[in-house]
Image 1 (spheres, rainbow, N blue to C red):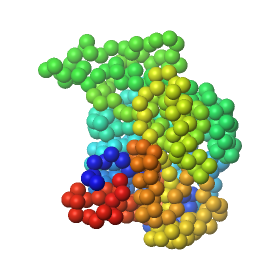
Image 2: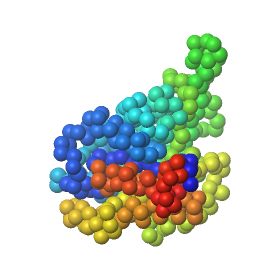
Image 3: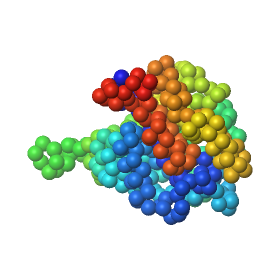
Image 4: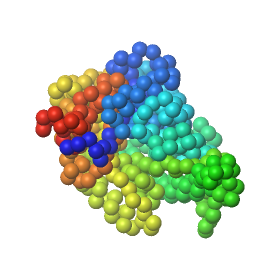
Length: 384
């Protein structure tokens, strides 16, 4: 099959990996390296040259923890803190050829006007290459950091019980829906043709306040201070629960599903489409899977790597999605089934350790999914 890029492959960049003990197994020697431009630009360039379609950048108001809802410890297993996702995105868009950068931005404790302007600025740097992932903050520590409105206190086990998420976070997700609509209204207040279009440098008649209907939660009227040529797409990370799915159906151009052994891809797709049918003005949505990966030369090698990581962390790795442990060949087969059997448009892969797992994704997995265009490769080389 030719390389038509119909199945998109993304890498979720996060520190030196997503496993809580990734730092103890990474070849990165100096934690300060994670706070340099070169570190992130080098990864974006490596991803682009290796056939990766997009990278994602995380955001957060408080320090990362090993488990949701717990305080950061001093065990030294993880580098705490992040660079600002918008600043990093500006670097990647201007200094690499990566096709898309998915920028996570908090919507619970921020202002729609500011976020709209930030993303519009990124869209000016990389037209058509910016995707926004609005992030609902369910961590009460975030409100403390910014002095914002308190959010419901969640225990770690609440994250994995859909009814609890739905009950406790309903208002936050409804607010997030209004927030995304507000940002999109603001993007429409200053279209790109308002600046430099029609042979004129400035066309003030193109720039106007937003039209506010009803009683919106975020009545940001604008106009925006930054012209918007190509509005960013919106991606939603949706755990298997009613409210995240409602948000995805209402505002998302793409949805990142989080399959588990209890909730496989077919079940998640069916559940989302049921909610989509009940959502007024639902937007067309591309479906992606979002999984963590631990890759190895063999299945035994991959499981041994995970065991050593878990030993270093002092507990088994528990995430909000499934953890694939095995070879690139088996992962390629799984992704092929998801695409051909269930119509998924892409996948976001969370590498357990950087550089190890990301390099295996780029060098071992991508060639299996993207056969050479020349057609010279044998038929076993490509599956998608």
